[in-house]
Length: 154
Figure 1 (cartoon, helix red, strand yellow):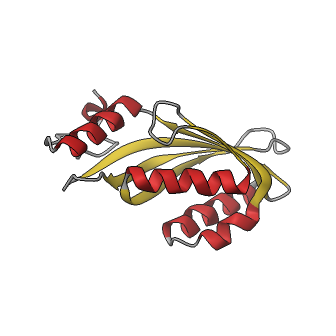
Figure 2: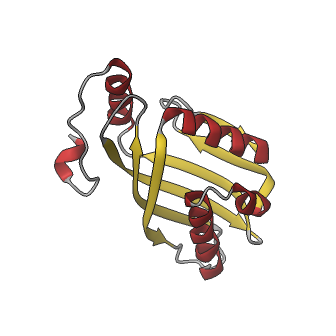
Figure 3: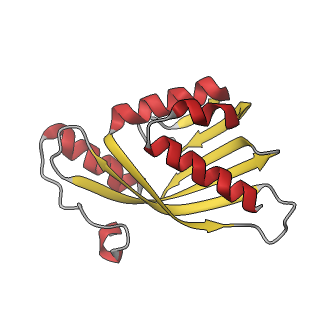
């Protein structure tokens, strides 16, 4: 499973560099991607085209995302294909001057060094939607806080 962890680390790195051409070949042609329905780009996406569509819609939702994976959780059973990553992402929302930081959890399924499924979880989708609304209406946001700050999620 260590090779799966390395593969996922490379994917995060390529996405951070805007190098989608390095990511697409490691995605199964029938990859399934799930994003919380409550988000503007939420839903189920199928195939590599679906993955690209999801990224495109996400980039319309926010600007200059910075994803910081912090913890990788490997299953106890070495034959399992599941890898869970938690961390935080920082974004500038359209119309906002300050950045917002949110925790995330991604669940990856890897088979034969190919990504077959990605489930994206955000711990506080309500706060993200509130920040999007505030940015769109020009209201100031008070949540340019770190995901590590327990008060930032209440």
